[in-house]
Image 1 (cartoon, helix red, strand yellow):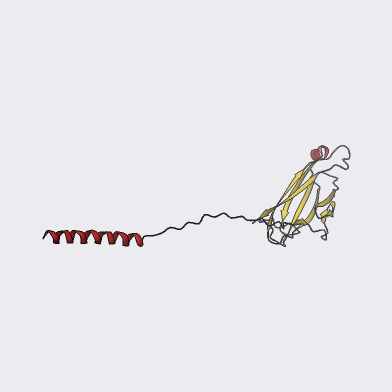
Image 2: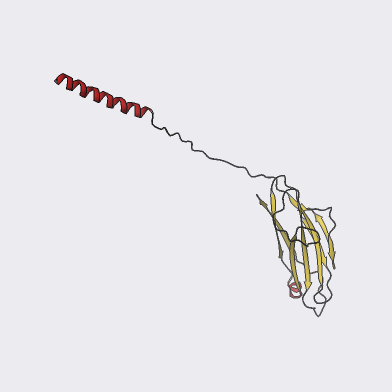
Length: 172
């Protein structure tokens, strides 16, 4: 009987060992991949004035010097007279959209005393629709510059300068 108990005990131990080995053989195995990614920005970002466009205006003349520079000459003669000019901007990028901002800078002190110079980004040349989103590739936008005479000077104010800076930032 003792042999039989020993045999049963050994059989149970072997059965438990076989179950442990079998369990170990079918447990999950975790494989891990650690990676890095490099994305090169699209260097083809090209936004410029459309130099073939004729600048439209009232009490002002405007022209394109080249694809990144334009001029505006304002002629004001009485309070609340406005001078406007509309310039066309083209996004010639192959993939990227462009977010535009226009800022009036470097207004000559004498000019700043008598005028208010503002800008408006537009979706159409008549500037009836404000530009609501970035301009997509191969689309255009318009920049309207307005100079308003807020008060009349005692003497003529001639050849005073101002700058409108239009910034195009890449957008996804």
